[in-house]
Length: 170
Image (cartoon, rainbow, N blue to C red; front, side, top):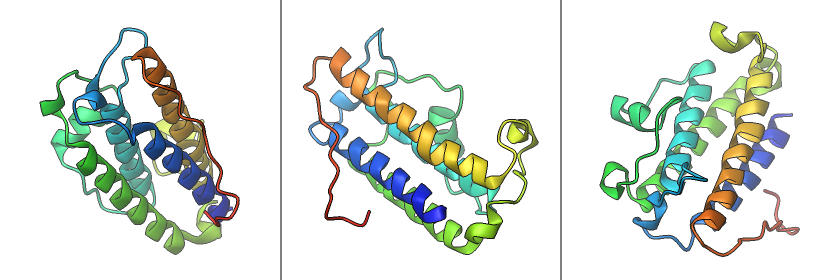
């Protein structure tokens, strides 16, 4: 099941990249009342979520406290580009987070998904590592990628259709 989860996560991140491909750093933080979660915040938040998931399977944290404050659960997106890393830096950090998680999942293995989720705050709704992985990498990521689609429309950008590369293994 790990390969299926990572496959879904990869598809979500590919679509995210298509949704921001035409944006510059200033556009990444454009805000609107109807869709306040802008592209920079969403990418940074997904990286933060990836670090949190890695922590559940024993990977040491790598993000700074400033990062957690800017992108963590309960943070509020800001409309100032100077408050955020550049688009290029965010996408590089997303690649790094993906690599760290992929490596950790290779070590975890299928049987590791059955282990209880260490975080007692979420264990009632996500009882195992597997439950948390499916939630964070599939549904949570898809929710935020969907927000990017709505955000683009709200700020007047054209629709970016989802694409599936039928010749790819990803």
